[in-house]
Length: 137
Length: 408
Image (cartoon, rainbow over all chains, first blue to last red; front, side):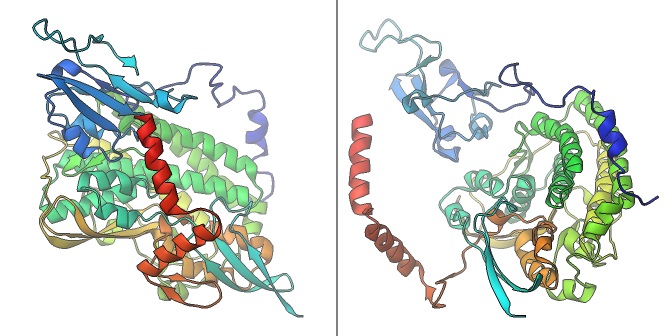
């Protein structure tokens, strides 16, 4: 039957309903398990082939050779488009995708994220000591 | 009565993206319309030539936020044809599944936007709430709400789990029930019918002559759909109906899109029921052979065309993209004539325009002279214009490199 106000019942029925919105950031955001967030780097697996660097659409990833089989990875989080192509390209699975997405910074320099290379073997004391865990530059 | 010309845009509250419309009015009635596009030109086609195929794929995906999978699939199909890759069945099914989920979210979004343009914001709130169900699935399957990045050359990047399949089927039932309600609202709500009927009228002959595509054409009885006429991906394996309507106005475009939603639910159920086992992708080469390919894809807004010329290296020689909105602009010019000025936003919104997707510079025309600028002249014009406004690029480059040195 054609008449006005066909959505009135629906609208009234929702007056007391639970809101459809989420109160982020006051409540934690609902993050899907498959979300492509910040990329994680496993320095011990890297062989320095630089395929990730070559395939990155936005030049966000740089692999630096520090010594024999020691590679550090520099991420420009402001350039990264979070497509995770580097994760697919890596032949040694040295890169992985995480669901971390709250990456905003007030200082632009903090967006440059360095995954340090593992400690050099004791035979080469010249290399700078660095923690194997991720640390901001 | 004397005619008066008023400019609408480039920045206008009714239209969310910049485009300039010069509307000549005869009283309250629109006599003619002229438009200027190009405010969103991003040089994507040229940028693709400087990137490898895999880098271009992510750039192509960012042509449009709403139909990102459409552009990415059209490009992937073209590259796969160039390289002669045989995509596994399961990969094609997942690609089609994402395509149909995207169609659902795009049509629900459009339904809300159209309702908003005619002041029916209740419908906007409900359709956008339901659209979130689809957005969550896209985020789950692809990894992002907007640029899903599901495609890769030779297949797809992510597989489906049985849990996800069950979850999608459950939500399709919810959405189908909701869409039935919207279909009921669209066919029974007197104010909506009165507002949209006989607005933006275009006959079948005009739609064909002006080359309209997608739901805009189908609402004018033009029975045309790439999914059926030139099947790609998994469409040869599914049964569906091409929704056509003979209202030839904005109301018809609402009905076509609502009916297409039902077809999409049916396609998704068929895909998930017959999902074949096996690999999702084959390995693609880095260097693509030389050759020319053309790919067609039925995006939610209409037919999307991609042309690629390969030269045997890992970078394309030429990429040309024809987004569906570009095909519909001439139809808008026809449809808007004879309507009232207040109808202009809904008539323009009825083609589901996407201004950024459309902007491809062919040639630049000066506003008053009609002079055509070449690439070199255009570059010189830009440098001189900025210099006149106190910005010297030669100076700027030096400052920038000095600054970069300091940062290092």
